[in-house]
Length: 349
Image: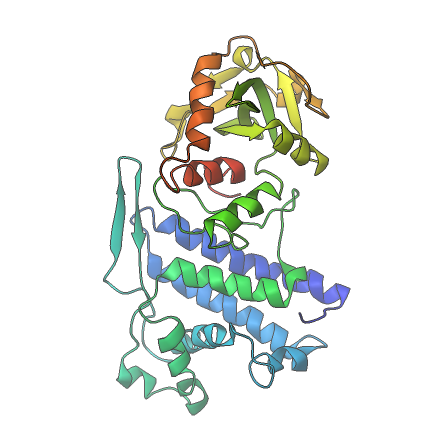
């Protein structure tokens, strides 16, 4: 980790925010007919801007530079590969963009393009300065032919490991621009902190605050002798997803300061699903006023018998619980659990 002065942290968090948003904006573009090349070039510029600032503008710049030489970091080659691509777009008449060979996945629940980094022709490389030409092997090893979003997230992980102080976060402590929008059936990571291993990812999700602003509990049901609470997660007045948690997990979340509320949701919402073209994973609910105007925050849930709020069908919720804890098919419940826990069902703010 490279130490930073307080003033440096404040100044570097903005270019880090630009980099984070360049990744989430690229990912959002892959769900439509957008210009992926423009988003890729924005990411290259944002990465090299931050890299330059760390190397040349901070008091510990020499220590940062050793990560690319004597104290070489495992991610150094990735950053050098990005620098190569950025210099190509900056200094040569060649348009850097993803390869035309893309994989399209999806169906009724949405489509997404998975693009790869394209080759830089030899005649373009020949026009570069020797110092940039020396970085071409890193581009070939770390980027060429690899899926774009995953390499972008790897870049974010590099900076988060080396200078974690500059990660730009929202008022809840979440990375600005994240999590990325979850897509049914796709288990690629959607957050820079998310482990690749699924069991580690589950532990990571359970150890952090849930996504969203608050959750409204609609009842409790016991399944296989384990009590679960259920309800809806809200961002402002909107809920894009239900949630299911054990009582133990809910109490842990509250110990982290996450607000769980109780109230008569059935009497205080409208279904506004038709206003959201990307609401592929369930209904979108809108509170008729601020959630706090009809729901009250609770501080602990323990020792209660099963219950349900007015207008709530407990039988339907039991089916939701069983789906989320189903272990018959390996990995079957992971994607819904991740989407709901991170509230990765609405484009990040």
